[in-house]
Length: 399
Image (cartoon, rainbow, N blue to C red; front, side, top):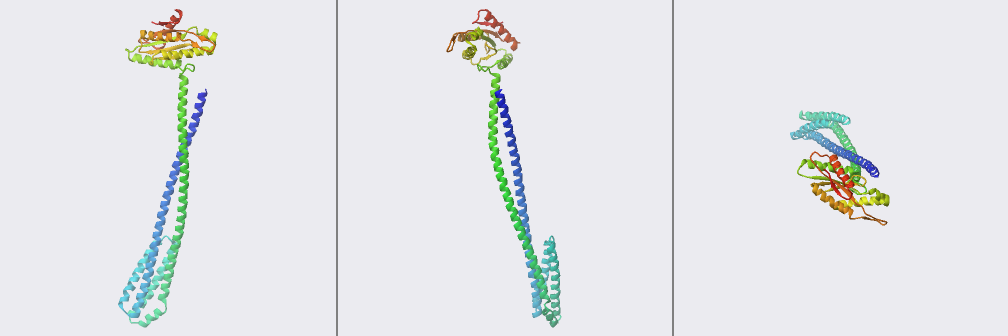
């Protein structure tokens, strides 16, 4: 009962540790998934930040191009007005074309920002006004109306238009830089948060991994203890506690196996012997049950010493023993059992208070085709009865 209780308790503890280990594995898998998601999220945010930086850089480049084109446009017009040279018309015309292209690209880049869209529209109005004023000055100068052209230039209309353009461009750039700075700061904060989150996941993962390793060690040890407990339980179930010999249950299983082997190979012989201690009740009555137990234990020890290594002896009753003798016919079995009888009869048990001499009677039966374990046992038991009635301390064979 103690072994069963210990085995049950160990099984419960092992199951608990197994469930804990499974839980750790699941949590580790979730942490790994969380870390993967965090890494993917960081990658996406980093890619988005890079795209936004590229976008802002493109906006700044286009605003600088437009700024340069507007200045080139007004400088070319004024140069033609003041000198009358055609060479100044080329930068004027080129500036107008480049300003229109830069404005179109800005409109495309900033289409997703409502505030910047308004600035781009205002910029288009200012560019149209600048183009109108400068083209008017150039037209008047080319028509020979130099005084009208100079009066228009001195009015400052072109200067007002270019200043409005510059203010709008400055506002565009300032807004983009501010948004970029805000996005950069947010991305940095998120990167720091993601990094801390990954560190936390790594720490928890390492802790759970350590717990899993410890639990695995405990589970393996628990399983080993359970295996030993099963073996111990099986040993107790199949072994006689007093003599450490196979008990009746174990002996009968071995006898069935021996009969199966003999049936499978008819050329092999098999014999069965049954012996018990003569007048054992007198020993118990005279010397006490502890002395009787000592005699039974001593008989089991002498039997193992007297028999061959291939023979199997077991305790099948109180003072009754059985011997399986493979590869032994009736004559060989008789010789072996006679040696056993002499070993028992010639060695009394010496105790502090008495010297106990005793003998044993032995009955032998040889396996015959068609025999089952019960038949073989019955014939050996009949031979044992003959040895008892014939005077004891002898070996008899059955039919």
